[in-house]
Length: 130
Image 1 (cartoon, rainbow, N blue to C red):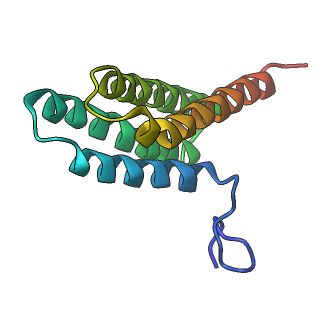
Image 2 (cartoon, rainbow, N blue to C red; image 1 turned 90 degrees about the vertical axis):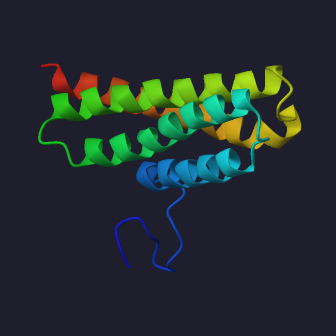
């Protein structure tokens, strides 16, 4: 059992590192399944970079040497998740992918962004002297 697992071996539902990794894996599968057009190749590549970067930076944030480093890395996670949302919106609005197909992944990006923003706010509040 590792720190991201419950006693029964299942992932903790609130483990942000695990959720961002699962998000990255879902983005990878989506990018592989996109139509083979020039636009989808470009947008898919951008989505692949931002979607996988979010998880990598979240992992790096949790290994940070200071609260300031944690906040900075989590800021990158927030940006990458927002960028991922943008690329998914373009896929839907260009009619390359049906909205119904991307809705769950777009919802996850939105939820993860909200969690990351909350983490950043909490870390900043803890940094201030009382």
